[in-house]
View 1 (cartoon, rainbow, N blue to C red):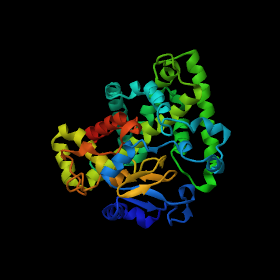
View 2 (tube, one colour):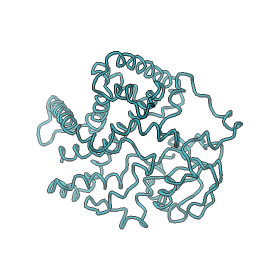
View 3 (tube, rainbow, N blue to C red):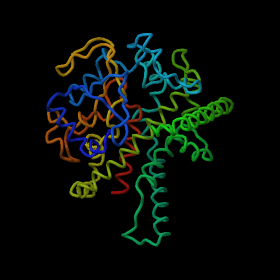
View 4 (tube, rainbow, N blue to C red):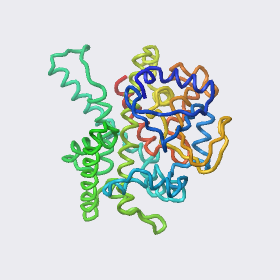
Length: 383
């Protein structure tokens, strides 16, 4: 997408939604919009309305599983996945029931709101340690209070969730820096020139995890990887490849959402000082403030691609089998048909939690409770 579009994204989405909440578009990459990245060599549908987006996320005529809509000939034309990465292709984000139901049932207990709430003391401790380190670094630079500064992303919003998810999974402390580097490649599209290097690094990450799985089978500990290796529901267990794919997804679900939530939240509050003042005066509204941040500056601009498996009417348009679409969460959550005065950032908004920033339905973000808790602790501590 072009730099101009990025500068005017919300304005562009508003114009698109007003004209037609479900519209054809060609999505390109690069700052100048140069390289054509049409899915399957044709335009895709962009869904910018709240009602239309919610329906698209719930309609069984629309799927996340590309293999159910393409012909054998089309599947044969798709880029071949390197052998070392094939274990990652079928995961909780790319399959529908019954396969999805089975995977989610086996991992969901570790990500309920009540299970995540038990992590609060440790997340608070990690938060305090990161802020103490940032303060010490500022002092070492000769900065004095109240003029001390910190780099929010590199010193706080990035290391907070990576530390938490590594501890949850049971990544040994001595391996976490390397894991952080691997996860950067996992979460980065990268340049064309870096694709081979990124693929190689992810392959190294996979090899490391397989070796870690072997160690935890021999000596299980109180962590999520050990639980996934042992969990059994009605006689069903996860295969090693399924656990591998799940761990990769958990790095995304438990990491990138919080990085963006914290960074976007601080930007919103610092550019709306009256809202920051309101937050400082009443800590009880922190949970609602997090929901408004999610609505106003959600951590994901769009969903992952969806695919039409049977003709369906949506927003006055006919979507035909084989077509692809993206729900633009950032646009749907600013739809005036759903939210009054949607362009205003208001941390006391009564219906802020009606956003779809984490998606909706069976594919709603698994890491949502963790991101919410980390966001709340970050706001409570820093404001």
